[in-house]
Picture 1: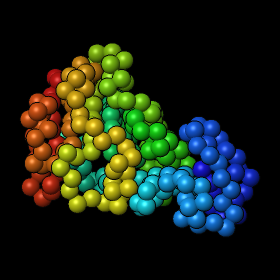
Picture 2: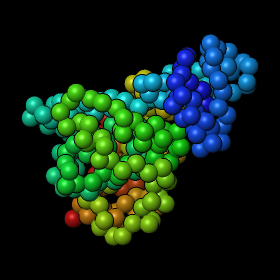
Picture 3: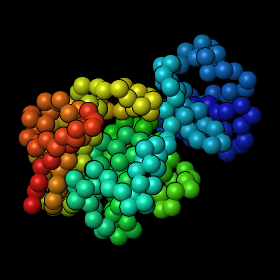
Length: 256
């Protein structure tokens, strides 16, 4: 854990606190580059606290940090009256309870939260500690000029927990929508943010047990996002909804 150049006292204290949280070391940046820090201290993974955001630098990849990403674009379209394919497929309504089982940095969770509104609830699960922390902190502090987006982010309940463990603990029919967007078995050309998180977030294949638990927990629908040619849909018992203009497809299990 380190800071930007010329940190203030708050940044330095946050670096020390995060070192305790993650079992790492808090290092004074001084004027050293990240490459110099790695060479001097032998650490590949560096979490940098800046005045604007937290950045996780991992093994020479692009830095990982929270940003609403495509959620901003999708919310802008919703505000103009356009449709969102995922929301339509899920039949999302104001007041719905949604659990995003593989949240990553939360783009879909943000769109769900905007759609269900203040009477609804979105729980975002991320089992990997670093992305989970970046998401939980990012939705509290990021400021957007898109109407309603800040409120949508602040309403999300982020939990750093394995989704199967979480689903097992929930009562029957406790969510309207259960959503899975795991790391694709067959990668496609990806955005920089997806490339940055691959290898850091949980990349295990989705288990049949998790899907069965999701069917028990969901009142209306369980949805899986995957590559359109993925065999995961068939393996896990999803009906495939393909979209002709994209390599992404959704698998659907209707629960009512």
